[in-house]
Amino acid sequence: MMRKTSFPRSTRATLYLVAYSGVAALMATLPDARAEDAGLVEKGRYIATAADCFACHTSPGGKPFAGGYPITTPVGTIYSTNITPAPRTGIGNYTKAEFFDAVRRGVGHGNKRLYPAMPYTSYAGVTDSDMEALYAFFNSAVAPVEQENKPDTVRFPFNIRSGLVLWNWLYLDTRPFQAQPRETPQITHGRYLVNHLEHCGTCHTPRTIFMGPASMRYLAGSSVGAWYAPNITTDKVAGIADWTDDDLRNYLKTGHALNKGQAAGPMAEVVTNSTQFLTSNDVNAMIAYLREVPAVASDEKRSRTSYGTADRPEDAARGQASPEDRGWKIFSGSCASCHQAEGQGINAYPSLTHNSTTGSPNARNLVATILTGVERRSGDNSVFMPAFGSGALWVNRLSDQDIADLSNFILKTFGNPSVQVDASYVAKQRAALTP
Image 1 (cartoon, helix red, strand yellow):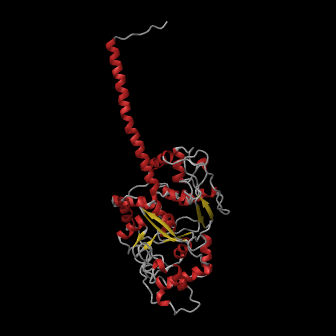
Image 2 (tube, helix red, strand yellow):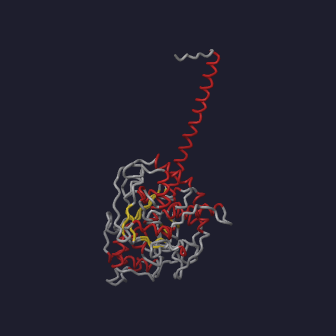
Image 3 (cartoon, helix red, strand yellow):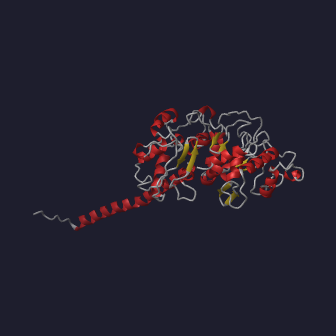
């Protein structure tokens, strides 16, 4: 039989004290560990916000991060995937390594190649520590939603995902992010935000014939479906050299820069879901870096924000226009009450002069804004313009010819008169806005 060991009372007391002290010491560390975990999750929430994950992975009226948002590309419509921690349809079964590979390499669960509509070429530079935080956030703070992923409608041969191996070889840079020589810490951080987390180049850099970024024209402006992401280099005419730091700061935080531009379409989503929540230090770092981006010129002769009112504003046109001149009539009935007869705007309604949309070398953003309207939020402020296209609810629905006439009047009167459109152009833009 095993003999029962008995310790003297004093020894037992000592052992109890040691055991209690060890447990107490362990318990004392638990709140700090929980605080550290909570801190990591909150950091991940901020990183996800800076990366604008919500905008693309949440369909209109859908549940957060459950996917289904349509992304229109020249090769077809790609629907964002479910990135909630749902085990079957989301990323609930992703290991940390698989999560890292999906975000930074474009390789999903089961070695499935992701289309670069998911900007993994930008996220490739996200640091390990930020990736750790993202993983913690999506697994701990996002509600799982078992929602099926919508099938993409990508045309042959682009629907053969194995071809992305070659595409990645051409365009995916997997080198870790690091500071460059003679770069200040602020500019380094701004470069990290602009190039990687905020992935500005995904929209603002033109594409090659293989749909890869044209690196020699970095941030020089590009078409994004029916919209146009303008040149944001330091070029004095085509870029943002004439935007002050306050202009850029106001635009990123509110979507509005007086006498410069207003965010609509995809950029309104960026402001609503991402840039308005960035810290002042991060916004200032982005601005500092954008001031260093090499200028890329275009064939534009004057800045898109330099156009003022022409000789014939809407009120002067009354009684003088020919029966065929319908543009001013549509403007008078549908636009002047908010933007004013001379296009000067009032309160939240922007001026149509000195406006990057009406002074643009193309009419994409003007036509798209008329078709879809504007809905943007920053803080407690909401900006709304009704849609006059197919989704019109509270105003008269305008035909393709109506929008062409209206656009031409606005361009001639308040913006770049060298740009004119016809009904077929509007029809193409309308189609591009429909998945």
